[in-house]
Image (cartoon, rainbow, N blue to C red; front, side, top):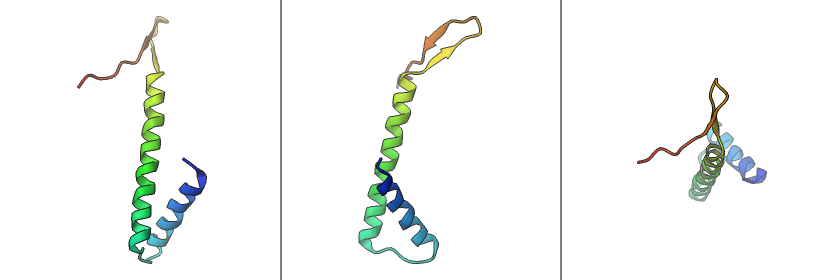
Length: 69
């Protein structure tokens, strides 16, 4: 996610914490940016887990398997 979007999320959060109310457009923008931020992190975590191995004490390695539903 681009840094300017993260900065905008932080700016809107500081505005709320200071007691100011957000307009409807700012609220919608904040929610959309938060969803995008969370989705970006989910993709990073998923990519990391897909390339993760378990290292056993005997030196063997096993690729991490996805949990079946």
